[in-house]
Structures are given as C-alpha cells and as structure tokens.
Image (cartoon, rainbow over all chains, first blue to last red):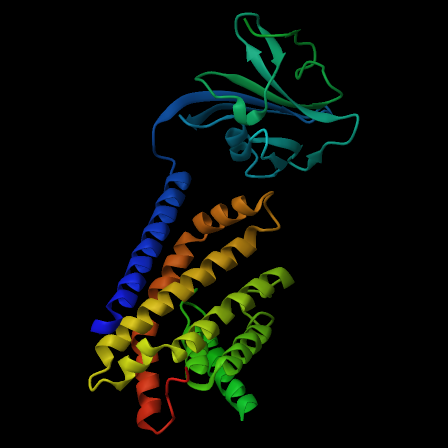
Length: 159
Length: 185
C-alpha cells in the first residue's frame, strides 16, 4: 500500500470530487422542483393564439428569481419551442402549445402598463423580463405589432 | 474461446439485468464487464459490453432504446471494459492481488475504480440523453447532470458496493481456481 499511496490518494480525491458534484446536482434539482422558497407574488398572463383563442392565467404564484421565460415554461408545462442564443444569452421562442411561427405570423411579447392602461411591446426577450408582483404580461401570435387583446390600446413604452 | 467467454459474460449480465429489472440503475452488469476485461483482456470486455447492449437495448421491459441512446450507453459500458483492462496492466492491482490478505486493498481499489468508471458512464449517457434536445453541448452536459442526478447517485452508490465486494471476490476466486491473473505490463 505504501508505494501506491499517492495513487490511492488521487483515487480518493477524485471520489470526493464526484460525490460533491453529484450532491450539488441533486441539491440543485431539488431546489428547482421544490415549490417552497421565497415567492415574489403573483402575475397575470395572457396567451393569445391569434385564432380568436385567448387564455388567461391569473394570479400565478412566482418564485423571486423567475423571469418571463421561466414563467412561460411553467404555464405551458414545457410545451414551447425555443432556441437559445448564446451570444445574446436569451431564448428565441418560436412556438407555444403547438402554435409555431409561420411568416408573417410570429409570437410577440407584451407587458401591461398600469399607468397608461395600455399594452407595450417588450423591448427585450423573455429572459430579460424580470417579474414583479401583480405584473400583467402577454404572448400574442400575430402579424407584428397589434394589441395582444383586441380593442385594447397600446403605447410605445411604459412610463 | 473468446467468443465463448463473451457469450458467458453476456448471458450472466442479461440474466441478472432482467432479474433486477425493478431496481432502476442497480445492475451487476457493469461489474461483470469489468471482470471480463480484467481477467480475459480488453477484447472480451468490449465484446461483452457491446453484445449486452445490443440485446438489452432492444429487448427491455422499460422500452426500446433509440439509436442515439443506444450508442451512448454502449460507449459508456465500454468504459468498464477499458478500466478493467487498464487496471489489469497496473502494478497497483498486481500488488493488491499478491498480498496474503488482499481483500482490504482490493475492496478499496476496485470500489474506487468502479465509482469513477460509473461516474464517467453517467455523465456520458446523461449528456447523450440531452444532446439532441438542447441547443448547446454545455446545456446538454449541465441539464443531463442535474436531471439525471437521482439515478446517477443510485447507480454510483450501487456500483461502489458491487465493485468493492463482487469484483474482488470473483477475481480472488479465479486466482484460487488457477486462472492466471497476472500483471501483463
């Protein structure tokens, strides 16, 4: 054993590394799947499929660290089509619940401006939209850019 | 002779796999592939690994493997054959076998080698599960490791146990029965 002590030490060191990596991965998985944890509040989300089908998801409880992409994945139970742009560090969502981009129709993102009571087109991707309590958001499948709710007013930017 | 050995190792691996089918990721198969390579060489180990998965991948109560999945699990299974063949050539294994009371060292040595080969297998196969579902290799690796963690822990824990117990016993028994277990380096 003495002459191979270094070999055994290296093996043991690698084993500790493996153990740490797996426990870390397991802990992270538990954290992801756990509903517990600090919650930010609730949000309301509209998904307008563009064929007169609209669905509201009201007062969804959200963890503090979620963005609009996380929320969308949650609401659709992962039924979205998205590609990840490593340069922009963002997802480009091209399909939601089986409805996929087909020119000239595209999925567009909107936020509701409380002060102006109007919808504003998001200027960033879903990953960059941080959620706040009582925020109202929308996905709309449309020829850009019309209001996500028929008849509702729109503004360029929220004030 | 080698074809017969491959057939025997394939048969006992499949037999135990099906017998332990209700215990996901707890299998003696990996230990058998390792033993095959350690006792009879890399070609017997690799032959056993490939032939086991050619059958187990297609005839499996949990469902048939797709070709990408089958490729990664077969490649991963070869890790056990490679580690068995490499250890067969290492002086550390030779010395552990030559001592009068080999079990303490062999348990430690084979247990740790088994754990590391299993970790490599799990990382590779979990990565392979996500490589066609994610947009980057890095994502596939991270998502695979995180989502596969519960199964990987079970697999690594059970293989640590099997490699520390079954493998030394089988190798020591082979040595006692006159099978030439020697350092070929």
